[in-house]
Length: 107
Length: 403
Image (cartoon, rainbow over the protein chains, first blue to last red):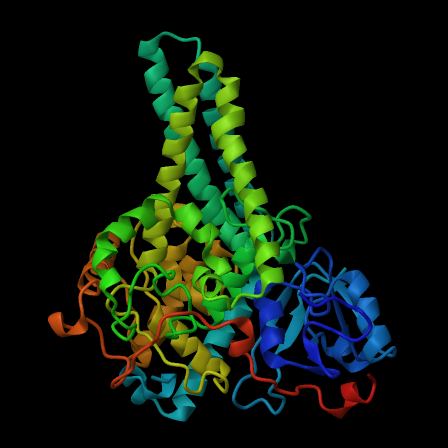
């Protein structure tokens, strides 16, 4: 299992999200950073735009791991906490072919 | 065969496929918007009932120990049945569904996919990998979905026959009665361990988890509670074993009826990677099978009698599957897509027929379901997670430049 050690993030490869790992995080309910079982609350990180439309590309994270991800990938990202989330697969007509996460019980 | 090559699907135009997807999206949105207090009350009620049943059973076993044999027997039998039903309810309607995240929206610290640990041998974390991810993402895809026979049974004609398959009827009976332990080992991938393919570090971690969980299960049912019954410890031990076998056989039956009746199709990995949401929906409909029954049967089955609806929306509350099923069935009728269902006894009869037929080489038996494709053979062994994943860059420059 990968751990946040400054270079390794479970669902990212060279700073880019790996689709299959994103799906694995969503369904296995594991953290996108450390690969361990998620805890409550679930954290999502993203741009202000993602926060505004409540749809995130990055997979669910532990609250502490979210801080690591922001530090390692983009300190301008914001963190949102939630009890649960919807995993939305891309549809054929979507321009953006990435799955998204929609927090459903924001804290 | 890829979803686009499935006969039952070929009559649909690409626009119709997307329209089906949009209609299923609308069903999902409707449930998401309307879920609330009534649903929360439902799951809390089920948990309360389950805990009372388990408590009554445990107390019954203890207080009956000094009683006269004539009274003790019926009390013990009732306690064993009550405990068996409580375990079934806990595993099927509560544990399985909570771990799918069906109730995470309640934001309840206890009824949450990240915290629930269920009353069975498999650690919750491993279940969420082997079931929520591997089985639900790769449903009925040969060589990908490890639930096709659980690595013990040959359940598809495309799986290569081996003389060891002749013993299937026996393995099936053993799997049913020892189901909790079969499931406990499911995510380990024994074949990969035997071939030396399994990451030793991960194997050690998983084995440690299983040993800890299994030890606790054994201590609880076969040491602690029997000890509380004093001289009658043997009777309590037997009652607990009976309850575990009841739960094992029932969960096996329900799970096998979800994917192995004649109407549930198998697929190959073609196009899996580029599958759209609508195509994913269709694979779930065509790869699963429902069974019919009353409300009590559905609750005791974790609402997996609505297996099609569960596979379409694994994280929507299970108490809503009945109303969803009416809409999904109407949708299937509208677009002339098969919706496999039938009474439980018929569905299991078909499962048994598959198990017995596939214990023999293909040339000795006939196929009962539409063929998956021409000359497809799946070798033994599972794919590791790394083999399931192709590297795809998703976020583009904006995240790479920040790293």
